[in-house]
Length: 101
Length: 469
Image (tube, rainbow over the protein chains, first blue to last red):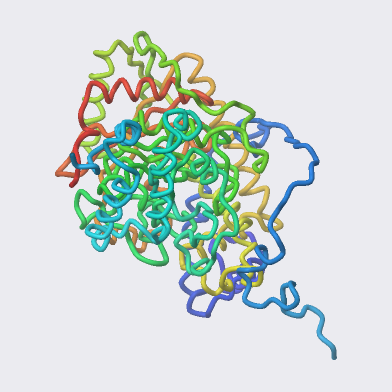
């Protein structure tokens, strides 16, 4: 990807691919100016000096949290798979990732 | 007695002294929904078993006697819940097509705690899909209307919860806020919205938006009602590692108001509607009469928070929505609405190789500056006070063509959300028949102080007692 602030169609298609979003050609056209204008608006942060500032990932500065490793009842296989459209013998059917030549 | 005019506190008292039954109470709200909701459209779904559950609650109330109230303080009270909270056996759609047919196999912690306290789930309320928005116009299903004027928006994303309470379709409701989604709809609908400290209430079982910000909170008629709900839903949860190691809020002791220092940030009054500013200033006069001292303060301009929030939220959204693959549950990714697609796309861009430092990392650093700014400010004052929203409820259609409607509309609530601070919005007046909200923001874990001041304010005013119905 180039660092140009006005995105190109190609860049938008590449982002859509990374995001696993099936966008139509029309959607790519529509989203391009929207994305470009949002990107411009967030670049206001360049006005601030953040040299030496530590980034925040959790606003309360909490450290890691642990719980006891106890076995407790959880969802049954049926409950966990109930919302899927394709279940065979209690397992999810997923699209093939390896295809035979 | 019109049951729908009672606050949550009054409703509980009536159940306790048996002047109403849970069945009567629940029926009265179902009736109200039946009459009003075709117009207001606050609810996405209604719990079909709620009357049966109310009958069961009545049996417990009659058979067990008074000691039951210690264990189940909300026994028999129907509560409306935003549709991003999982309720076992009910649809949880987050008002999104992708989850249109999804039925939760478990309860979110908030819902479990409500049920353990005896509450009934009345129904699930409409929202902007995935909580992306501040209007409910981005709901994939329909737009909720403001009960004070149905040509206007209720705000959002918890717009259905706020409208349900304001329309007398629910005695109290649960919402969730990432940056403004409890306080802003509460302000626009003339009700009370309490966003607790990040980590005070568990996010377990809530459809995730931006996980480093999401905070469930109550939307109610009064501060007292919000306290009742927060005391039940708050507290550490082993299912959410980000919850704070604190006991549930008790609100047993109210804090003295006299002598408190309240800061007014001048940058929070720029670009605010004249009438909104005026009524907030009137509210401040009332607080001054109660003995608080008003101090002018400077805070980092909210415009930086808008940018930080946009980057962090959209990045986290793109990551959180990556799980929807249409395989294990839900529909496939082509069913995302335009707003979700926009947010996923920007977030993917800001997280992608080569841009991470420039956007996400930078936003996290500015987030640190915002937190430091608040910490420094709270060394000298107790509470920050400002309008909740720069305007009253906007007209239907206001979000059209606005790529960043939510982020721009909510600039007065975003800084405190980024810092994880608690905030409460209370009604402080009207402009042309539409409610105005004033917010109080405190340091982390200051919910008791905020509640004391906000409750004191409601004891001196009756804006919160005005009903749209």
